Amino acid sequence: MAIKTLLIANRGEIAVRVIRAAKSLGIKTVQVYSEADEDMLAVKLADEAICIGPASAAQSYLNHDAIISAAKETGADAIHPGYGFLSENADFVRAVSNAGLIFVGPDADLIEKMGNKIAARQTAMKAGVAVVPGSDGAISDLDEAVRVANKIGYPVMIKAAAGGGGRGIRIADDEASLRRLAPQAQAEAAAAFGDGSYYLEYVVVNARHIEVQVMGDGKSAVHFFERECSLQRRRQKIWEEAPSATLDEATRQELCQSAVKLTQDIGYVGAGTVEYLYEESTRRFFFIEMNTRIQVEHPVTEAITGFDLVAEMIRIAGGAALSMSQDDIKINGHSIEVRINAENPMMQFLPSPGVITSLACTHAPEVRFDHFLYEGYAIPPFYDSLLGKLIVHGKNRGEAIAALHEALENTMISGIETTIPLLIALAKDDEVKAGQVHTSWLEHWLEHNIENIKP
Amino acid sequence: MTDIQSPLPGTFYFTPSPGEPSFKSKGDAVSEGDVIGLIEVMKTFIEVKATQAGTFDSYVVDNEQPVQAGQVIAKLS
Image: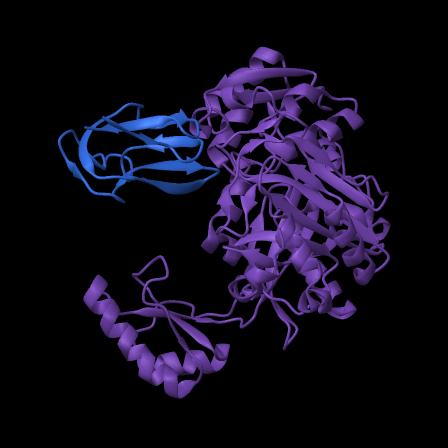
């Protein structure tokens, strides 16, 4: 049953993005908003808008009942969750289907299965997808630890079985250090938790974050190649590209095949992303998790493949089969996305809400700017600091970086502080240009290059 | 009376976490730099500190209430 009226249970730039996709499909849109978001762009663009509660997200964008009532009241037959908020909340998804509405995404059982780290790891292993090697269970004998470590390879991380939150983690580079550190970890865990057993896990040194965009209709599944998101600060991605600068063609095929196999095995419905750590020195990749929603960085995949992923996931939610086969999906050129946040990179990334006094951006054909800004708009302080995403496309990576640099120089957001100066400095950096980055690269760079950021 | 203002717009909290006692109560001695409350701005928590010493009188906004930059949130006597 094709969707007639879609309610968007989100805000900011992704709400604008979903409305655009729905309109392209001739679907009527209903935008929900909190009392603090009455003026936001998505409210102006949607066919209808409805207030669902106070500024606090817990009472509005996270309020299951308020959102489902809003859908009933406006006659919406489907709910798009965007990313974040309720997009991976199995209880909400259950409530949506119990109310007789369509959730744009997989069903609650699938979200639960892939949202649980241990269950997801087992599901991936069953599908033949490599996971980060580790001990099968808890270890308390040193000789056994040495045997296991020799099998999984060094360096290994020693984690207390009873611990949590990274407490007491040690890293052993070889057998001698394992023989020294494991008894320490055991004694410490025994004293702290009354249980001295521990797990061993392989440490991917200078890991790169590579993920595969997938889409399924419950019967078949396709991949849209990979994205690399190794530039991160506090685990927040700030620069994403497609394809990855580091993969050779054989590894790319192997990686994407493993993701599509997993997607197929679980009968996945909708847009999803299979995330991996990639070890450049050995060209090995390891599954870490699957995100069961559209991601912030989906536009780079759209730029290199030419498909509208948000429209496709809405069509599938309405009961349609995948509109493309794997052979239809090809990589064209290179795309980069940067996230522009309302933060001051020169002041420990202090958030900077406030009124946009003027806004200027480039309209070059190779540039796309997904945002929710307009002159005079007051960015509320209650939500995420993401203002928008600048996406560029080039024939190759070098061209894309040059286009990105130019687009950033031509983007002026006045009235608030933004991370544009940081992004410009990164676009000029030699290691970034050479693609020599990994997931801890940016934090290290920030410690030494803060003076290279020019306001 | 001395006013303590919020340095940023956001959501004001006068307890370190839900269920805990407030940072200050009526009659508490306040030194310059003491934490009076927290402002949540764009998912980041920022401490609101006393800019001068005194005796705590009262919070003038509710816990978890949205506040503007410069808004008075507490008073010292």
